[in-house]
Image 1 (tube, rainbow, N blue to C red):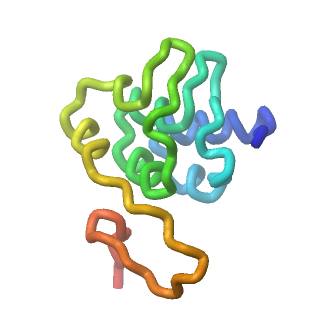
Image 2 (cartoon, rainbow, N blue to C red; image 1 turned 90 degrees about the vertical axis):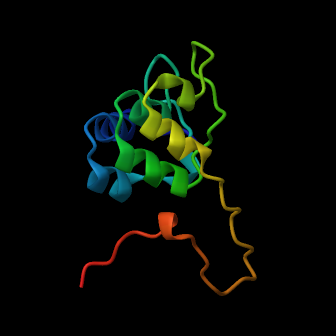
Length: 116
């Protein structure tokens, strides 16, 4: 899926500035792995480079590709040396549910905290 320039810029800025709300409101699932800059960096590459933990969690929850390479041949995990971020990449990916399933299953790490 091709994203227009304005959407790419919006997502780029959200990933770099930890703007979780903007990213979530504008995240287009089918375009989640679209390069957002001229270096071929996806949202996951950018969030990892700028150490935006909440953004990385959100992107991984929405199944952003962990193995897409940028123009330097790097996968997102290779954009950091931060141990906290590297640990996020070690959490197993839960398979997408079947269309026939009508229940919700998640680990505690996958569920956003609920404020009452």
